[in-house]
Image 1: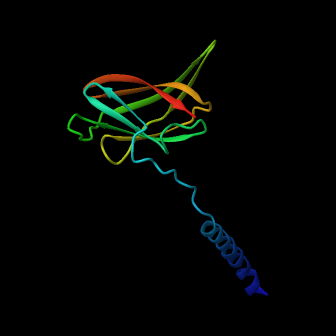
Image 2: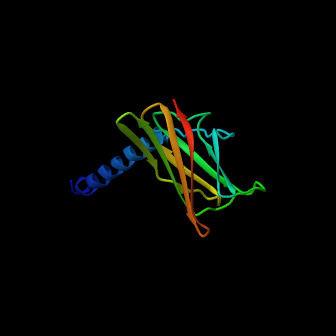
Image 3: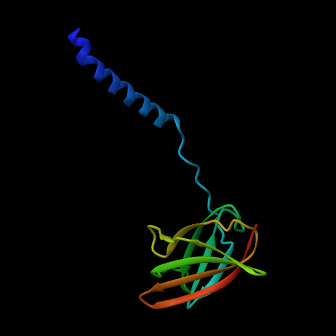
Length: 145
């Protein structure tokens, strides 16, 4: 009887660990979105070109992973410091905003953000860079489907 008293907690802990391990192995990780190999938009900022990449040739209303890279005239990647990416949709008596937090990637000059405009239309994108060379921005029209 004393053996059962000491073995019961061990059996319970072993069962909980087994169930947690089984659930972790049985579930798949969330899907990743494939980024296109060609940019859907590009804009000049100072003497650099900012190229925007997404899952296709345009942004979607219900969520996008956007990849932004900055290259100089020679085509080399350039680290520009901090980057902001904003979308505005101007309609009569209303303006909608969609802002994504831009994060650096492991490669200098390449950045990633997620943005969800929530509505199709003709949006205006604003990219702002601020680094050692100062602050600059550029705007460009973007179609959201």
